Length: 277
Image: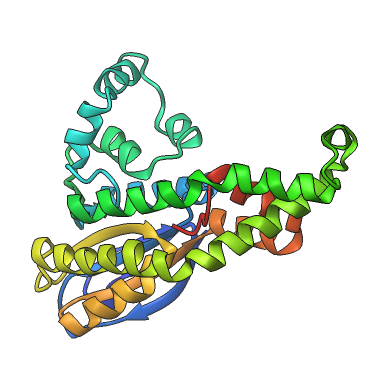
């Protein structure tokens, strides 16, 4: 936890952040964008972001929270997914904020519950989001069979040998297959999934978050793989100060990934692909 003085950004406030500031850009005057890094398979990182968002919102400086996903809108998404009843149940049960955050894996939904008066805006383009989802589904569809084929080859075609295959070896094979699949899909993912969405993120933030409002702020919560391109685009647009924050939960998660390849392989299998967001 560190105390961050926001006066250099034109905001007369100090806020405790649960992470590291890994990038800054100070405009002469204008709205400050707090970019929170996320990995969608890192719940600890998401919870760190939620605690920081709560603190920032409670200072009264946040004009909007921008999120990915929920292409029809956060409120509409909550209702269409049948989550409105869950929201009401949480209110009736008087679930404490800390308890709600401690069990959360969805940033947008939890902010919607915690601070219903706050404007939460999806910055997705529905068509680009739908196309990206279809590309990723096609990419993932063949992976189980591909992993099984590799395992069977390792066993010399003897299905019975699968029963005694070492678990460590199974993880090693799965990791290799997933790495190969991701390498093959890298250009496709960038062209059909990441780049189009990045363009709309820049466009929608520029359109809906007024840059020339000194003393105001917005939170932008995106998968970390989007940050470089989106921040670069907004800097070119001008008018925004930017703080990029890597939450403690994410930092600890990635340190564990670096130390333990088996942990890395298991996480990639669970999230169905590249979990970087």
